[in-house]
Length: 168
Length: 255
Image (cartoon, rainbow over all chains, first blue to last red; front, side):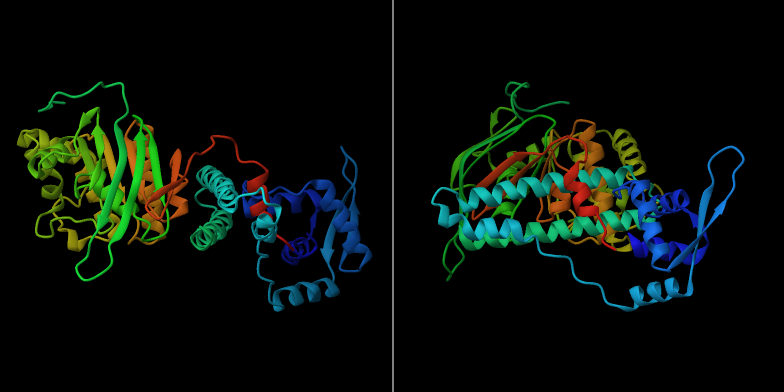
């Protein structure tokens, strides 16, 4: 959460709730929403680390709000984030561990295990399609987020197929 | 809908296949056991996807069910009526009236216009030219192809050609729509379009059997059959639940 918040602050100073809304607008309703408490905690840590600085602004009808602006050190952290290459997504190794170890139990059938996992993936895929249909067509970032998840699942399903071909 | 044969019980399944077997025997090569004892029932209004790796025999299965290929043994009933022993000509009539088929490579008649490609099966099924024209116009409009009537297939994109093929398959309001990798030669935009249309027709009650290796397409169906090595390995009804933790998990971004 740290670096996305910093990146948003490069554009303009903002308070915690505005940052939450900016993330939601960017990534759409499909994105697991960060809770606002988590955002406030992250912001105070960033401030302690000197990456942003906050300033209280008085409001007549409610408590003060704290507006954050990015510091030079914060900009450097953002630049470094974009500079470094991003680790590839982790292979879902827990399922594979089960598959590999099934013969040791003497009771678990590998094909049954694959079928069960496929059912799970297919249901997830179906739910992602529903999310894509419910999400605003014009929000390309959100649509791409969902499409990326679907392509990963497709790869997982293809891999299950390979496991089944080899093990059957 | 006029029928040339007495039909079975209209309340039973649309399709029931039992113990289907088909072995391809290519000359000078080992026989291929494409379908090895398949039982399959499709209920009225169901949207069923058959998935599996290429070479699993899923296309052969679809060809058997559409009468494009004959089983070595086993029975097929459509609307309660035994059809596996029908002659070529009888199958042609059955396909014209009760079974629509879409293929991966569209199989449109390349020197006919879009309008003629869609009207032809309606005319062959005995519709009046006026009625065939009206039905064609309605379907093309619905499929977003209004204005393309006078184009030939070669002037259209792949996605558009597949929509014409869909119109042709649906023009006689078939009881069963068979689709063999309908997005297999389309880009992702064309794929989404075909999927959206299949889902829309299904919501209106169209029974669909879709063969695909694409899990994204398969997950649009209510029921997914996993086909391996000529046999049904799994047969599952997909849930109608709301997106839950599974989805949250795959969408979470690090950073």
